[in-house]
Length: 389
Length: 135
Image (cartoon, rainbow over all chains, first blue to last red; front, side, top):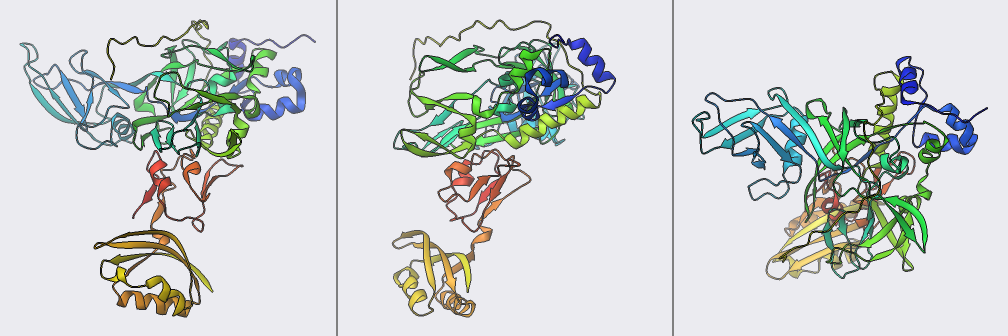
């Protein structure tokens, strides 16, 4: 019997007949261990993945409709958070990490987005110098998910493949986007869903590219481009390649369709505001190579430990560790027992993978073959400043 | 025999008196000091764990109230809002006593109030405001 080969079309036909066999990336691990790769590949059509972690580079485009008389918005605020209005008259982009104008440092774009998804009223204010055709100079309004024309998320950097572990070797507590890091290796923080992670289950991005249909924030969305600083690379330890990192995606989804609980505003003490995004990507089991990829376990996924107290771009590495070790609650660094915290929620990642599995099983979600794949040979460049202080 | 955690708040006048000594010697209570903060001329606060006879504890609290020491029971000080919690676990590694853990079956957060010493580090670490700390 020859090796199994499936196409996206064959899988979608099965989904339409409600006959597709779908498992989460956790469930398929046990299947592969019990049945071996060849048999397991025959048995599974689609494997679902999920992640729920802070993703700063998230935000949404809005079109709120025209006032009477109309205004060409030059500056606009939603609940006191400035959005970018350098587009058409009533088009603007609200970013997750933008803070409110008031003294508060714990309310920002992410909170407005969450409030919007929760159906709350949002206060809008816009100003303009006025033009002959757009005579209004100032508007105030209340908008909500019911009133706007469009509100769609465009996130330029989401679902990063394999984030590092953050520690702090200095003598002071530090406040970072990886949480509070206690001095002298007092704790270690990581952010990934490991064996459930979308890009760790298809590390070469064979099945993920422009057009891939995804679960985003409780709605259906798509991969639209490579993410910013996209640079897939190997992780090397003692001259051996032990892992992958660096791929990342740009995603689009309808904010009006998203559901509370699958995205959540956050404030990291001493750092700033960000948005937790729930992302799920289904992976077609095209052949044995794909099955091998999706059956990766936490204990096989390695990442680097980085000292976040170091004030320069390239931070010192303190070695590598796998996700099974991280989830045990402690890792050993320089002979010290260091307690660990995840910043991303494994429980929610599981929920997302299961929710997506259910949609596909019920014939409500079809896989989209990428229209274009991402070239894997890319580095990301630093910024050469003329001045920095 | 009961175990009770409490916060005692002192004004600057009471802070001169050997309150802890009196609780131990006069009311025969086992006192474990979890946190202490005093500022001369202003007052202070003690977070303590008390073990002893219920009747003795009641008498001791009556004595404290007579001396203008405000008493609050600990369960109300650190409040975990399970609806907001997304079970990320950012709070787990900053807890100095391991009162917060992630369940290895369902990967959800578990908060052991008995172990909690009300330091508030978890509330600082929680990115979604699911832990409130009223101090």
